[in-house]
Image (cartoon, rainbow, N blue to C red; front, side, top):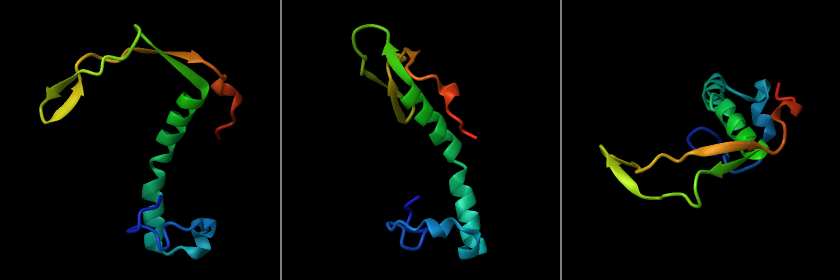
Length: 93
């Protein structure tokens, strides 16, 4: 949300920029496109806040393998979520 190509004064706190009266049509398009990522952020936030994550074994194997032009973990990271806070107690609507 701090992209200088998308927002004027991108590093300043200006909540009024999200009010419909202060936006142009182009700004509305940019904002709509940026908001597509919020559900992903909410899901990750819930996973971090509400769960502890346990791994199989004593430590994570950080070996890498070349998969095409990308690096990937040589062995899958197997993790188990353990509920810390019940996510259903939050009103996310």
